[in-house]
Amino acid sequence: MSLEKIANQMVESGKGILAADESNPTCKKKFDSINLESNALSRNQYRDMLFNAPELENYISGIILFDETFRQKDLSSNQLYPDFLSSKNILPGIKVDLGLTYMDSAKLEQQTRGLEDLYDRTSFYFSKGAKFSKWRSVFHITNDLPSDQCIKKNSEDLAEYALICQSIGLVPIVEPEVLMDGNHSIQKSYEVTSKVLNLVFESLSSKSINFEGMILKPNMVLSGYQCSSQSSIEQVAELTLQCLKNNVPSSVPGIAFLSGGQSEDLATRHLNLMNLSTNPWKLTFSYGRALQTSALNAWKGESRNIILGQKAFLNRAKANSLASQGLL
View (spheres, rainbow, N blue to C red):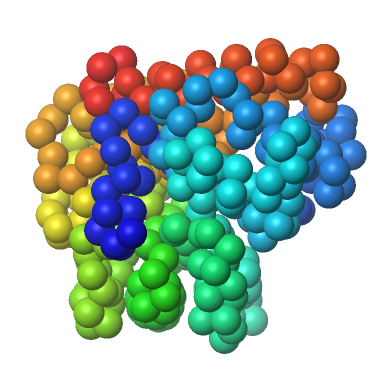
């Protein structure tokens, strides 16, 4: 299957991408909230509950897996997850970055690890059925940050990652996340996100990345979460679309937003409003917390609650499916 065909399937109308690629430490924090021990089995059971939700394939086109999950099996069929998901017409994807490290001794800015052995690791995942990959870079907003050095380094790394993945046959999800922690205004968020996206696409272009065979996973343009003046849904949608239209080539087939700490409801409402406009790309979702929080709280790590957890998960998936079509 060509890169272009996979990318278009990832953003098929009415469908989005489940981000189930939480690292083990992140998963532990989630499980701590429901007083559940995080171990290989409990993480397998949790993902199994999500992936087996009835008719999930009607709303989810692909699932980003963590390395551990990629190697685990569906508990009922005993199929490896990449094979199990493919049998449900859900594209299996894989997080290929190795997390963040600090760029400076003051520990103010971060870059993403994992380029050194990326070709070998992505070749393995491709051979085992992965169809797409994901690499996340982060950018902090303060009065002085992000620095030009941070934006340049992370943009270059995202481009190198995309080049390696496309050379192997994986569609790269390019995820430059401008973090919304802080008291900055939505205008500051707009300015930083614009600068980041502009340099990311400049770097991708310099590596001759096939834009038709990639997906962008950006933040929405929001007020800082600690800002005293929170923006309206209308303002978020307007500035996010303006930022994207000024910086993202129309040849990119789809933009799958990260939720970035937004509540489930707000992430859905923002997406719906943006889809009331005519846009050059498909606008959909690639949510983690904004798809999983209700499901996790309903499940509580107990087998008797699996159906409750799946119902809560499907409710969010259906809502975002509608929002990705402007039908909510």
